Image 1: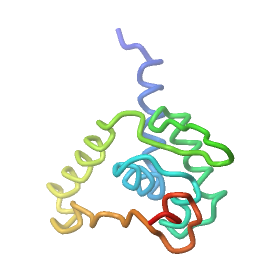
Image 2: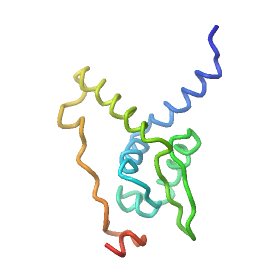
Image 3: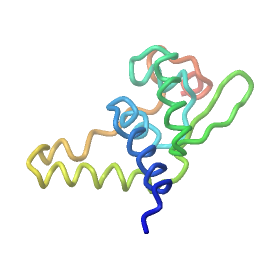
Image 4: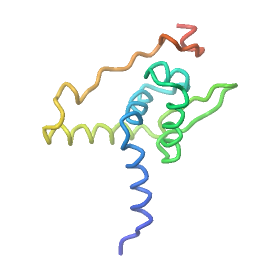
Length: 124
């Protein structure tokens, strides 16, 4: 017998992964923990937009956060999330919907990032 609640929880995770900007955020977090202001500057989007997508990722259990003073830092809840992203790219590659050079995006810059005033960018 199928447990529909299990599939519902699984679908919630896939829904969270179903937005391009959320995938970009997860890709940025593969390199380690980052504060919201750094992610906003890195990806060139307003902080409220980034926070909205991070909240969806947190609700799905894909990221966790911690507060340090006024800053909120996010990190992947589990490194295997990267494996899920890689598996999706591999499927697209095999289906001919992605070119090999697209399957491994260039690493995102770390520090400093123009427009970010986080402690890590100020030190770098």
